[in-house]
Image 1 (cartoon, rainbow, N blue to C red):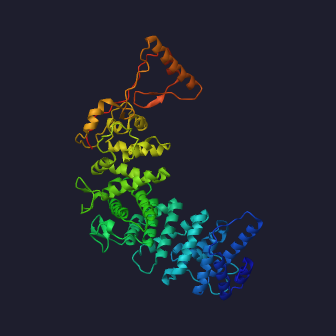
Image 2: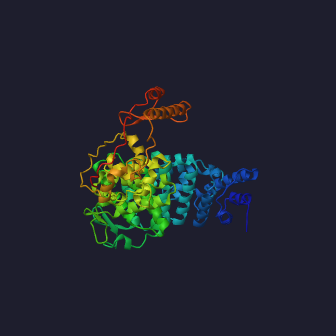
Image 3: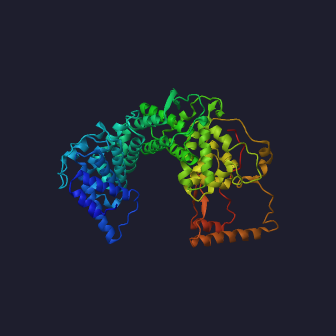
Length: 583
C-alpha cells in the first residue's frame, strides 16, 4: 500500500491517533532508505513544502499524550524528515528542540521552560496536551533512540539548531545520563547516540566544548565512560587491565566487541575536541591527575584490538590523536606498567606502548596516503615523547637510527625505517617534511653533525636553515651524554663520506683540471652573470648564508659585487660529520 504526502497530511489533520499511526507507518516504511534529496525542480520544491507541513503536524502530535506505538511512529517520521537539510524549518525552534530533547530523556530546566512557553498551533489542541517532563522517568528506549537520532541529524545540518541546543543547555542533560555509565537501563544504542550527540555539539560549538571541559568536568566524565565501556579494572594506580583477565598479555585477549569499539571511538573523538589546546599548557595538580589517569586508559586502548584490522587501525588512530593532545608530562604513564614476560623491555622500562606507536607509524608510512592527516599525529607524539623521556628516545633511536653500517647507499635509498623517513624530508608538503626532520633531529639529540651523518646535508638543509644551523654547531645540552656508538664500517669510511649525500662516492674528476687561472676566472664570472640574469628576470631568487646561520636573499648589489669580485670566498662550508656520541 502506498500513500502520497497530501493524503498522509490529510490523515494527520484529522487529529485521530489511530488514523495518524497507519498513515505514518506507511510513510516510514516507504522512506526508510531515502537519504538523497534534490530540490532543483519545481515538483521537488513543492514536495519540500509538504514535508515541512508534515513535520509541523508530527511535532503537534508529539506535544500530546500518545499511545507508545503512535509516539514511536511520530519520532521515526521526524528522523526521516530530518535527513533533508532543506526541510528542517519545523524542527529548529526552541519548542521543537525542547520536545525532542525531552522525549530523548535529556531534558533540562531550559527545555521545560521552552515547552511551557510555546504557543499551541492549530493542530496541537486535539487531545490532551502533555506536560513537560524527563522521559527517563518511564523510558521507552526505542523512542528515545529515534529522538536522539533526529537531534543528531538536525544539529549536523543546521546552524540555528546548534545555537538553540546551546541555549537549551542540552549538554547538561546529556551529561546527567553519561554519569550513569554503569546503569543497565541504557542500551548500547542510547549510550552510542548520547555520545554521538555530545561529539557533534563539541565539534560544532566552541562554547559547548568549553562548558563540557570545565563546568561539566568532561575529562573525568568521559574518562569514566571509556573505563566502563572497556570494562577495566586497576591493579595499580596507573596500570589498567580488562576486568576478569588480569595478568593476561594484551595480545592474548579477545578483541573488543563492535559495540564497545563504536562507543569508545565516539568518546575518543569527543575527548579530542575538548582537549584540543591542552598539549603544551600548564595544568594544576588535580587536572594533571585526571590527564594521567586518562593517559593510562589510552595506553590500554593502544594495546587492545578491535574486531578486524581496519576497525583496529581506526580505533588506534583516534587513540593516537588524543594522546597527542595530553599535557606532555602525563605521557610518562605509557612507560609505567611493570615489565612482564613477553613485554618489550629497554633500559628496564616497558616499551610495549612505544613499540606499538612505532609500528602504527610505519604502517602509515608504507601506505603513503594522506600523510599529513594520517602520519603527523603519530610523528609529533613520538617526537615529544622522545624529547622528554630519555628511555623512549634511546629505544626509538635503536629502532629508527641503529648504528650506521651502510655507507655506500644514500640515506633515502632502502627499505629500513630510517630510509623511509629520510625520503620524506624532501616531501612536497612542508608540514610532513618538517615533522619527519624534527623526529630524526630529536633522536640525534639535536646535534647537527649527528643529524647530517644519518640524513646527509642535502636532506638536512631544510630543518637546519629554518633553525639557523646551516653553519653547524647546535646545542644538545638538554640531553644526557652517552657512549660512542660508531661502527667499524663507518669509522673506516668516515673520511671518504660526502657530507652532502651522506655516502662514500666514487672519486670524480676535477672539471677545472688543466684550466689556467684566467679560464677559471672567466667561468666563474660567466656563472655569476647567468645567476644575475635569471635573478633580474625573476626566474630564481638567489640566496646567501647570513652571519646568524640563516638563509637570506641575495640582492642586486650583492650580485654586482660578485660580478666584479669573483674571488669572494663562500661564507660557510657544509659542516662535516662528527663522530656519534651514542644514543
